[in-house]
Length: 246
Image (cartoon, rainbow, N blue to C red):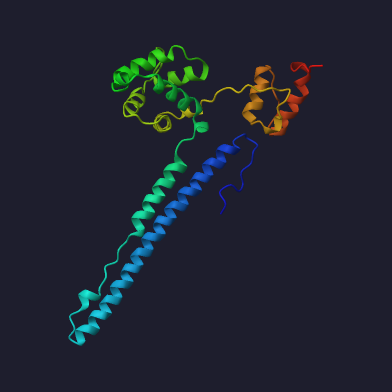
């Protein structure tokens, strides 16, 4: 069954759902391959043992003792190869993409590149450096620091989940993958898009982007449910907020 069937674009989550469902499909396929080859090897092994048993009985009746020379052990070479390939495949498919956790991956990469080898080898120094690093950040990046405990007014702190992997030279996507498990809000952070309403095709925007346009105008869309409702409302208000150049 195709994993993309039944997906709609009304809630603005089309790309994310395709990526999510494709990964699930890939996981199922890889696990299916491993299971298939495992069962195949077990069946072949049993069949070979059965054949060897019959050969042994026949040769015992004739007094032959050459059974050991005729028996060839089943060599399960395919299973390790399949497991390795499936593991590499799953690692590629399931790794966190930048668009899935853009603020976290961007900030962690930038922060990691700013650290000297001396600081990077000490978790306490990394945490202190991150607090200093956060002082200059604004908006969504500032909120990311707040979630991790890098701000003075942070309610909680999970800086250890950042400093330890950084000291091990773990890449940013893997670090953010771990942080996401600690706090889902971390990957919900998105950078605000700059939308040029003079040239943009509204139907290509996500619902959350359409809502943001209305919020920026301090307008509401009463009774809007479908994406087309938001587009219609924006088109109605556009002459009031967007000046057409002559």
